[in-house]
Image 1 (cartoon, helix red, strand yellow):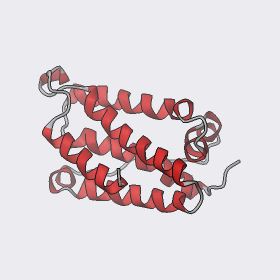
Image 2: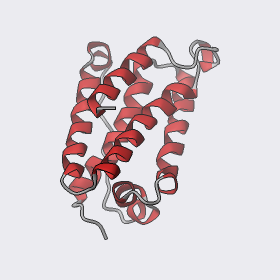
Image 3: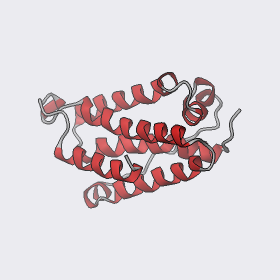
Image 4: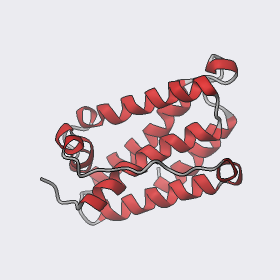
Length: 159
């Protein structure tokens, strides 16, 4: 089915998911987190359709790949102090690096560039999903903390 082992597929799926999750966690509100989770789910669910010619995204996010049962993600163990200290972002960047190491030897530079953009777009979708303030209804959609996290991811991805 794909050129990737189950472990590699997990790394490919984990990178965009942990990116979105990290952006959500840096600026957590009860309702906004639910809105952000929905936005990230939409990005992930639509990945195969948005990038029909990308072999990386097809291998990890096509309907067949997701139904194959090869991809099992553990619930991340995130502690409040990891969010405050920045350790969560560092860990997410390490996950991104691991995924990029997998694809850089197996896919074209164009496919890798699209995959990097997809990872970043997962973070952006989360950041733009809910505003600041009570219930995420504030007019400022991307908080300072989210913008800072996105900037770190942009550098890590080389975008």
